[in-house]
Image (cartoon, rainbow, N blue to C red; front, side, top):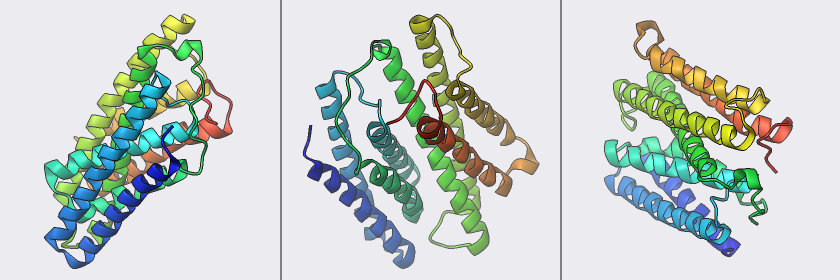
Length: 264
């Protein structure tokens, strides 16, 4: 396993990017935004390298405990933000998203990074696809959460450092749509995997039920974007509430309740 110092170097890169975006929000200097983007890019590259190294060392995608899932979630969110930043040049908007990413990575670092052995029922590419689609979907929902918060802030303060409300609304809707598509693929891969491993497509285990509720919630949000009275501030609040459901499904059930998706 790589030395723990490298993980703290990754944290430092993301922390420096957060500081850069915070300075850009105040000073509005183009070089600050570019420097922060470069730091984010360096972090994504290092993060990807560490994830690949752990994957090769384990022989499977290591996402079976709390350290590994938080680490993968952080990577997926950083990659998601990098996509939106390259495409839309979000600037100071990156402050909130990268701060959320920093919290995920910070939650992982104090935990044991050793990779546990893989149980036989998880030894299938369908498990890896299920996890990849799940956490990239979660990352899109986290992005939508961040954009929802920024929409409400911008609606109140009307800052020139943030995109206008129309742009934030469109980006929020795009993040929801992409996240819903990815999470749908997660549910499909999980259903096929469950049928092969245990002989059923869906179980009434609490984790499966809440995963379906997450899917149902965001399916409703994909429809709500076409309903005028749900647009704008209401949609932003729904994005925030939806991510609360995601966090409960991921962390609340995995840590506090008995399920077939425990976290240690």
